[in-house]
Length: 114
Image (tube, rainbow, N blue to C red; front, side):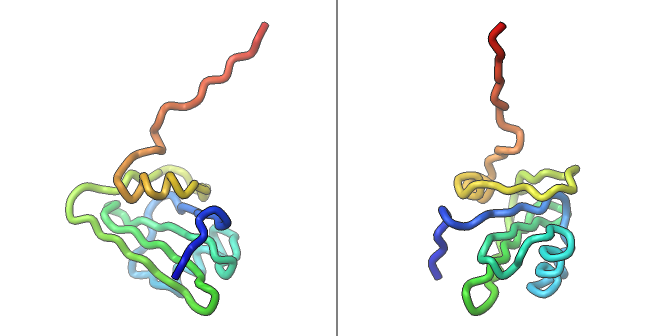
């Protein structure tokens, strides 16, 4: 399976997701809560309550792929309080999988000339 990360969107669902849900349950969350087309080929990322498990759901032309990562130590950096789905870049996905908290990185400051 080859994913062209330049031509897909990567969506992260903030907060916790019930990890008893598998492909069908996560697909319903994508369609009903996130309001996205689950068959478009985008990546959808979910995290559990204790933030030590992550699932990524992906439609791969003729079927779903469900990736699962479990951390033995540490926790994933994860936005807790937002109900809004976040679109992230491939570089941010790599940071997330490495444990880098880009959610709390320095913000750009914009100044206006007087």
